[in-house]
Image 1 (cartoon, rainbow, N blue to C red):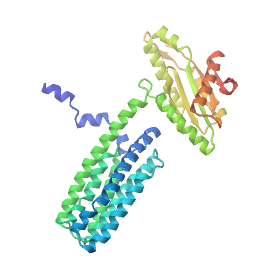
Image 2: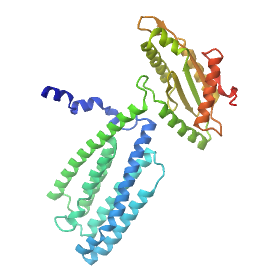
Image 3: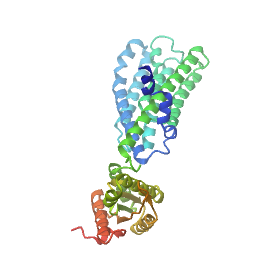
Image 4: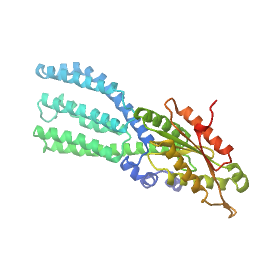
Length: 384
């Protein structure tokens, strides 16, 4: 039983094996879609916490009135009201919810507001060490800021930057009031560093979980390309960007010819190998910012932002020609060849994702009906 537990219980070594350290360290290699999802997580949580602070901050004013002198209470009352208003504004701003840059900026502002409050509160209350009394309650603010960051799925680099900012504010405040080298302050720095380490671990665990869930939900297990759900989402975004910036956008729809015959003749394992080999071909021929994925069965879709139809046809022809030189070995050692039919179309002003997909599908149908192993412009097909 003990041996079984040691095998099944995940430890530090197993966690590092399952995690991609590159993905956990920085978000440079994350997909645009995942960055948008993560930005949404960060934005929602910042807004909820900001709203909570905005509501709770004024409720403490009567407590301040009980324990503060009149000279301290009057400026502190306005400080709390301003603190609450700033958080309320942060909670109500609802723009660029899926922009990672704006999500990071929003989180920074969320940390900046209590940082300013902390410095000003120390000044109003005399700037001394918070050994006892009401000042002791405000001394916990930097620790709360560090702990609250544990609920955000941040990369190691992001977490270090935010933690460094909070600790720098704390150290700068102590330096400002001449208490930096006091033994109590040094103990607080040690505790902040310890909490920051725990927070970083929690952030990375969240990020790792989100990455794993995202990849399981977004990627096709056989080919490693994104699935139809993600492709549809990407297409909606790219159509909006193309129309806003008056840029061309084209799509390619691929269908492997007579794929059912390959499965029936050589078996599904060989069919899977063909799909994998074709997906690798697409990945080698279609680079970012172009987007590719498995649309369903033996169909693949490519989204080409910034490409007009002529450029899209040239790319489609290169891929079609490359298919002719690919050989896949069956389980019996036979060489299996395959070809692809491709529909091509370009975004029109009145298009949405459904009309664009419908039209490129009509182009693919024309390529199949005209003899397969062809590239067909969708505009030649009537949509009546």
